[in-house]
Image (cartoon, rainbow over all chains, first blue to last red):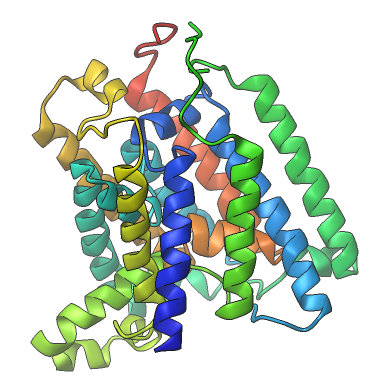
Length: 178
Length: 175
């Protein structure tokens, strides 16, 4: 029961914030993808930056649970291509479509229904696709910490790269709405 | 063209800090946040009473909890959060985004078919990778996972390319 209440509370807060920044608006998402509005990608990357620093703090005091997913060169890469086509086409991702549906956007409700169909289709094919595509090129749950020798150094590299990307987006993206 | 009235949207920096606070809270109170798993959890809840034997034999349903779980509560919460935020916001929602309408017309059927197809692809991809924008890119990168960063770079690149193919130069420089 506690888990359900925590999930609900976390979801409500998350849904509220992403709506307020415009991430549930497929029009703003399209403008972000078209490099005409920088706010949403900057928001996403900065959220990761602060979360990574916050999680480092949590781990320092031994609180919380982490789970690093493996990197499969073929499956993760191919999945990302499929995902990117769907995201660019619809302007929704699996999280934003719930919040956008709650907001009353009919097209998001169809994205949600399509998502249920897509998840069901994958569940049907899991036994075929995971051994064929995922396992052979899986590198295991590798992190930047493994690459750079220490968690601390990995975090510094991540924060620097994300801040650099946020700066670059500010330079390269236009500002149609202000 | 700049408008005089201030934007109703939150500014990037405070919004990112707010979201990061929520994400860190989730790591502390549950674990890595995820939303595409909520779809599987929802399906499991719907299909279990209808076709119990099918659900029991499929690994993808076996690896995730059913509807009485944090994952399900989180996506329902997202919809409630979106509802509350939408009701208290000055910009009205539209079923067909402005840019889409300029490019493909007012047809709701065309737009709904496109988002259904898009929704299918994002969930198929997310389930193959093991997570979505939140469950893999944001959660993963927060934990320094290469999988999250690798997935993130490709989804941004491909979605940007797709958006260019879909919209071209529609409405450029008008708003």
